[in-house]
Amino acid sequence: MVCGRNVYTVLSVGVLLVLASGCAVMDTENRRVLNCLDRLVQFESTSAKVAAAPVFVPIGVAAGLTDMVIVHPAASIPEAGEDTWEVLWEDPQGSEFRQMMLFLPKVVASPILFVTDWVARCFVSFETF
Image (cartoon, rainbow, N blue to C red; front, side, top):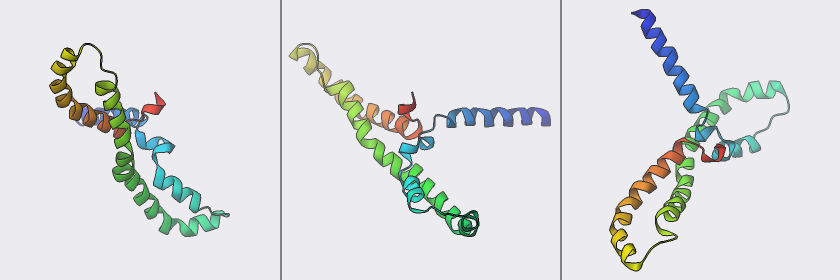
C-alpha cells in the first residue's frame, strides 16, 4: 500500500510540473512587480547578495504572490473583455431579425465567456501557444 501511495505522489507532482510549464506567472511579461524589483535591486558582489538575502527573499516571495494573486488577474481583465467583445458582439452576421433573436443568448453568454476567458488567462499564458 505504501508503494501505491508513492506512485500517486510522483504522478501528482509530474502532472503539476507539466501544468506549471504553461503557467501564466512563469511568463516574464506577467510578473510586473517582480520585474520591477529585479530592475531596482542589483548587487555587484556575491557577498552583498548573501548579506541581503534575509531581507530580499521574503520581499521577493511577497512580490511574486502579489503578481500571482492581484496584479496579473487584474491585468487580464481588459484582454478577457476584448475577447468577449470579439467573439460575441463585434461583427454581427445575418439579418436584423436574427440579431434580435440572438440578443438574449448573447447577453447570457457574455458573462460566462468573460469569466471563463479571464480565469484561463489568469492560469495559462496564451502568448506561449
